[in-house]
Length: 115
Image 1 (cartoon, rainbow, N blue to C red):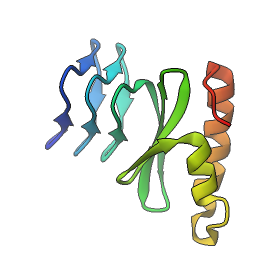
Image 2 (cartoon, rainbow, N blue to C red; image 1 turned 135 degrees about the vertical axis):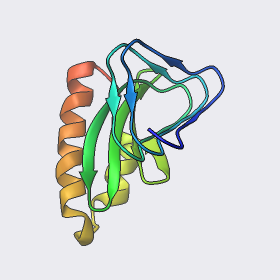
Image 3 (tube, rainbow, N blue to C red; image 1 turned 30 degrees about the vertical axis):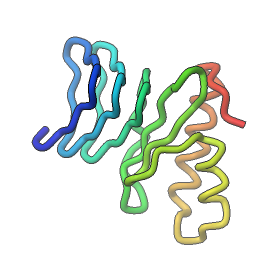
């Protein structure tokens, strides 16, 4: 998409699709066929990203960084554990908390640390 920003050393596999205004930090690696929606943010060294969708006004993605699950949301890039703490009491982020349940299941399935 338009206005994407790729950091130093990023690697994109065949048939990757990045939405409008995606931002990838240094040394991100996306395998073939990955699709990330508009305004997706992945920090440095992210691999195997999964787009969780757009809820509560922000795109949410989960990715692996050295075996740890990370969440990108809005302008934030933090561990899944920190994301859970950030949103656990936010009554205005009900759908985000539901999406985070999916992120926890994904992290467990992938074997990424998250707590």
